[in-house]
Length: 424
Image (cartoon, rainbow, N blue to C red; front, side, top):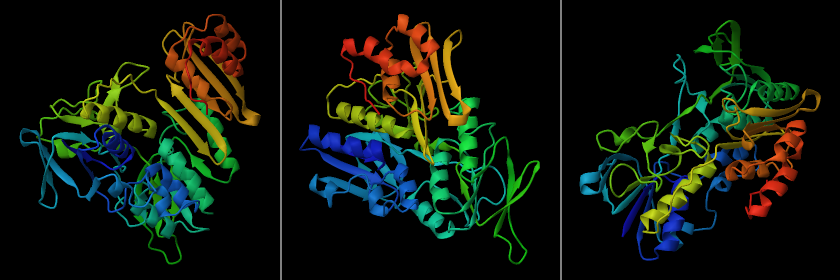
């Protein structure tokens, strides 16, 4: 059996490892479009802060890890998939056949539709090559403008701040991390960042990036709607991502927000599977099919897809939307339907002075979502409570009075069922 995996991120690497364990005799080819060994994009900020070198970003650090497991890592870009002949066309003109194909091509960063984004000092923070360029221009004392304060933007924010730069963050939304936090939580995060010396401009749209013409000025000026221009030695873009599925045009593979898969991670054409940021998989909370661009989901997808490719039936139960963010020492997290449901109840504890916030969302007496800022102890049990869908009975009333008691609610309601939540 010849397995080909396109994509060398967490989904692809987990799938390759799983296939080798389940089928010791099969052929496995792992194709990546970048020249480096398979690495984690989530480790790039640690590289920028100097905590690790480039090799520290690698997903498998053992020397010749893939060679020892007979996993052929091939550096190439796939141009097209031809399902009728079970074949891939490569950009260099070559072809590669497969028996089973896993598409784990991830996502790519989007640029705002303004002039100036093609300047050499305007860069995404998405690849190791991007990180090298950021390290070149983000020197101590330099002025950096970060455009976008979503989840990815806030991860990059910390790395840029720790390099000793003068950092300004521009976010089009009315709060930071708008897809993870409500107004109170986002407001706490903004105040915390400003306390650390970072300028945060929310509700601000950029209109262009210009090259400075005056001697002694910073190389760039970022133009903002209704605000003075921002001088910049470097502009970093964190303005969203899109599934890498354009190369599938004409293949017949069904693509919506991403590659549409079933509960076995199978695409719409036989012998083809998808996993990770490119896959439109099942959302646990809503029952809808969505792209969840987070690393835990990618790893789960890769595992399930590989099991099915190897002939071991595995069914996707749906991934829970969850994010945990460390922003200059302030920990925030969101799980499930953190924004709540129609007709549901919520329990809120807000301590602005101590940067503490908890918001629990209920549907009847079932916890369906949660947001925390400044609370780290046992927050993993919130995930357990949501995923079990256990009825809290009298514990809902207690949590409405004091939402910090979620660990007690977990022990009383979930542990007797034998559910082993992952404690953070």
